Image 1 (tube, helix red, strand yellow):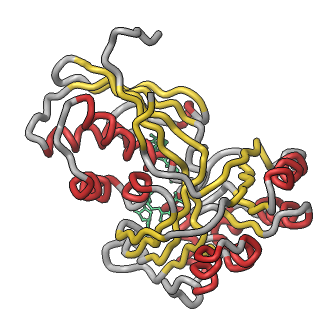
Image 2 (image 1 turned 120 degrees about the horizontal axis):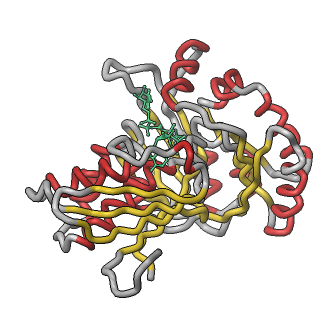
Image 3 (image 1 turned 60 degrees about the horizontal axis):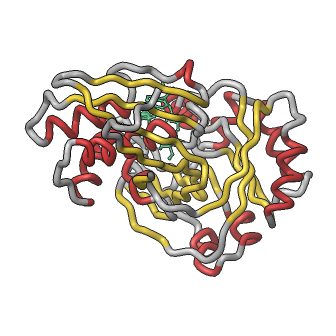
Length: 304
Ligand SMILES: C[C@@](CO)(OP(=O)(O)O)[C@H](O)COP(=O)(O)OP(=O)(O)OC[C@H]1O[C@@H](n2ccc(N)nc2=O)[C@H](O)[C@@H]1O
Ligand SMILES: Nc1ncnc2c1ncn2[C@@H]1O[C@H](COP(=O)(O)OP(=O)(O)O)[C@@H](O)[C@H]1O
């Protein structure tokens, strides 16, 4: 039960899809260099921070995939809260975090990273810390490569591990249908399979993706979208090939595996096309659920 008199800071944070995910060869640090185009979509987690006694960190999770989300120090929002407190020299600051999830867990849509970004903002407000955008970005990058983007949202090019961001302006609104799969895919396992499959690797983002965004050409974007992790995700989950095929044959302008998968993201020409597409996809046995969302949307924001 929420009590109305209690201090409470709520931050809403979006999921992402990668419009381009161009993956280089495995580097000595165990990571793959990326050239990626992040795009934030209107499917959200909420993170709420409430006061707690010194030294206490508590997390409760409700909503999408809660059974697969740890509620201890393994939770990325927990790590975010502790990192922020320690950086400010108050390691004993307490917080009770509630996470309301709509973003699928282990779905390639960076839900855990989004929660970490939201926890940084919510705890910063709760503890009345003076944290500027540069500090938040730096802490976010320590927590994970997708966390900085969740702070800013919109569209952005990501280089390095995806944490070196350059914002991108785009025209128009894009209508997405997400086909969620049963179960998740482990990001490290997908990168491993990417290595095993071999082939040429490049971090060059296709100009077509950037040009399509700049002019708001949804058809050109649909044709140009690229995900180098897709063959690895399909190899691990062959049924995703049918999901992509059915989406394309039922009116999607284009479809790709979202990030490391297994969610598939389809671009539709309009909201009404998106509704028809969602209804066709939801009849597939390998599709657990569908969601509709548009993008780009802003990053983590206080609400209420
Ligand atoms: C693939 C992407 C695309 O945006 O996101 P998701 O689709 O999973 O959300 C990201 O690169 C997910 O990056 P990140 O958030 O750091 O991945 P984690 O789940 O923490 O997994 C970390 C592990 O994945 C591998 N890894 C991750 C990123 C990268 N650029 N190269 C890698 O090889 C490494 O083995 C690393 O130890
Ligand atoms: N707040 C969180 N929300 C979801 N998963 C989390 C969270 N914190 C840690 N995890 C762990 O991170 C893994 C990856 O989750 P997530 O970020 O949702 O997927 P992805 O990396 O595919 O985008 C999950 O399997 C879960 O064990």
